[in-house]
Length: 302
Image (cartoon, rainbow, N blue to C red; front, side, top):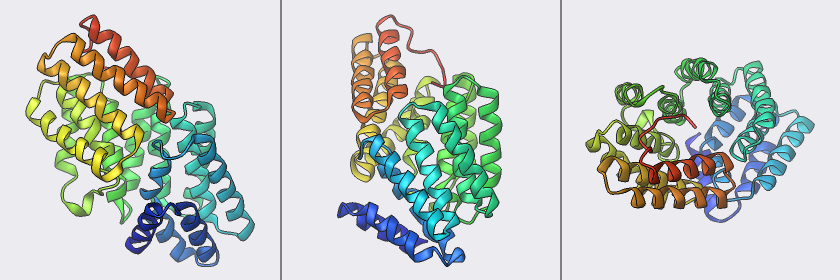
């Protein structure tokens, strides 16, 4: 699995990530015991497709082709992987109905082959679909189930950050979000329980939750993590936008003035729009307006 991750990272650096995934699919069509390792190893590096590196129609077409080829050669794990990747791309592009369809199928396909990692991952994304629809109780139930599944895998370090990050975002108010953050800090410790490519999915909501709860010490720490992860590790447009959103919440928490916070949120919105993330862009546009009117301290999942 580590070798697969390293190979995928190198392929991404060369601009050959598509070819790397196709090669893994072909190599593992007749080796189910290896296929789970290969595709679980691609799990986090494939997130580089999803945060502005490629237009979403291109990502969806690639995922659709990957799933179809997997069916042709009998690679069940590759099929489940491609379907889930497609659902993720549709989610981030704002097509919640299509995302729900394919992520639900991803859960079912992974469950059928005993792929707990992929099942937990698909379920975490389904929780986000429910969150964006305002179905918060459903989302919390899904994220709790995803966490139970993740704890059964031996590569939970690719999952725990993003699951706990979603739990923070689902909190009902700043106090509940801070409690969720503290729970995560107790539960996820050390290099064996986190992943550099996945950590940003926790650092961003953690920084925002701490800022909203006026815990500036924690907020500063996670803001620093999100800056490093966005600028050095990930280097993708949507994560730069996410860090701008963090800075907007920090400006509110520090009392830096309505104009400063509003400009940060507006910049985040523009960057999210450019990356093809309409739901995130709309949230930040609303935060910019709320900042100007002095209402940005409110809390909401979306």
